[in-house]
Every structure is written in C-alpha cells, then in structure tokens.
Image (cartoon, rainbow, N blue to C red; front, top):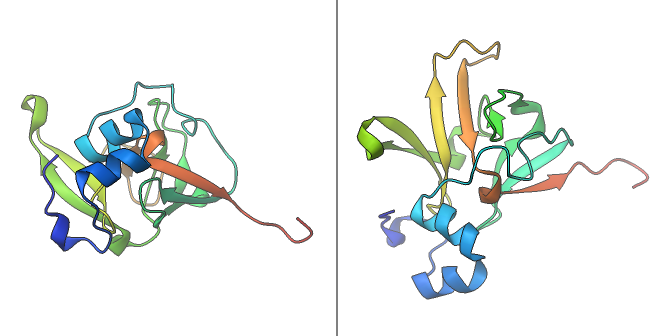
Amino acid sequence: MSTDVTRYPVTLDDAEWRRRLSPQEYAVLREAATERAFTGEYWDDHTEGVYQCRACRAELFRSDQKFDSHCGWPSFFAPLAEDRVEYVQDRAFGMVRTEVRCANCGSHLGHLFEGEGYDTPTDQRYCINSVSLTRVPKVTEGS
C-alpha cells in the first residue's frame, strides 16, 4: 500500500508500525491485505459500541450502522462521519473497487460496495476487515 505519510494526522515510520501491530494487523492495515472471510472477531458481532481504527484509535463506525450482509466481514452502511474515512480507487486483481482507509492514519480498512440491493438507508456496504477495527462497547449507566 503506498501512502504519503506526511498527509495524515498520525504519521509513523514503517518500523514503528511494525512494532505496534501484530504481523496480521500490519499486513492488513499497512499493506492492504485481507483477512479470510468468517474468521474475524466482529463479522457476526452485535454488541453495541463504537468501532475504532486498530492502528490509531480514531472512531470510524458505530454498531447502529452495522448490518448482517452474510459476506464474512463486518459490514456497515455508513461511517461515523464522512471525514473519518478516505476513498481510494483500487485496481488490483483486474477489477475496479473503492478502497476505504482511515483518514487519520491512512491504514487500510476494507472496501466500499454500492448498489447491491441491501435494505439499508444508503444501499452501501462498507466491507471492513475485523483486524482493522477495535470495538469499544457502549457504556451503560451502572456499568
């Protein structure tokens, strides 16, 4: 994954990213790899909370934007706010897709798909790798 490290609020050199992230996290977040379907910790999780970028902890998605797409990865119909993510045209593997990155650190999150007919407010599916996220459960009174 080529990113211009000077344009993101969080900038670390490659050695520091490797120190902070596990090998799988580094491969997905910094090299745009993909975890295997149905193996990530959040693909079928329904806990209320906020999903943060695992690399920099920026808040990206909320559980009320998550839906069951049955694709094997966490799916959201919208980010927390449009300025939380950035979109990059991905021409890998002989197809054109829209890559989704964290706007705070440039880490790869997954891809955006549109027009698939899901019954969501946006008809968009942010297909996000679980390893790219950390879920912070909603705190309820008395907890």
